[in-house]
Length: 41
Image 1 (cartoon, rainbow, N blue to C red):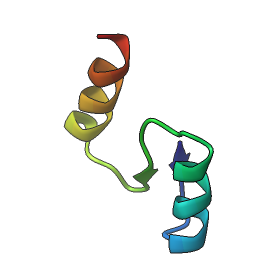
Image 2: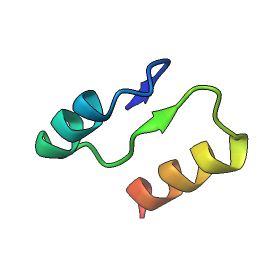
Image 3: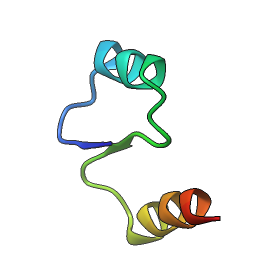
Image 4: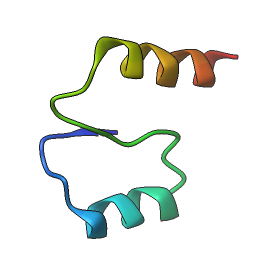
């Protein structure tokens, strides 16, 4: 999940719903690529 809001409540809900990553904007390109790589194996 990518969001413009740094809200701990939303992050907790995303984790509860099994989100594989939760990135706050602005995020670093390497952070996004790491999340993608983690999920595609």
